[in-house]
Length: 88
Image (cartoon, rainbow, N blue to C red; front, side, top):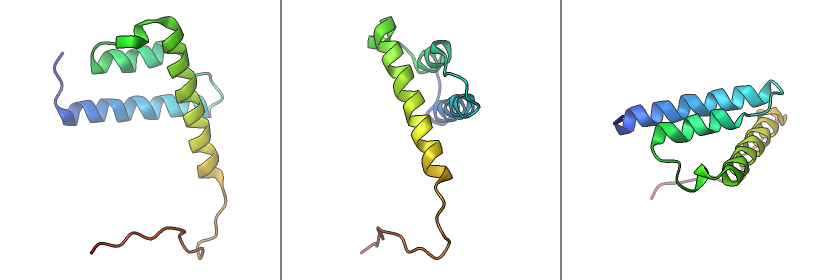
């Protein structure tokens, strides 16, 4: 299966949204879901080992929880940003 960059990006984005939604509903992100995302990009490499795959699954789950916590943080609309990027 050969994917263009655009198709690959869309696939990874959709997979990430699905995993995040799965986690936000209180469900555990399954190893099968992580494996399917890896299979879509090609070879699993070191994640063919079940211990590494579980480590990746836990990392994705933690990332999704952290992202959800940051999104829930209440911030008033008039708060100035801490960092401002300018182009010279």
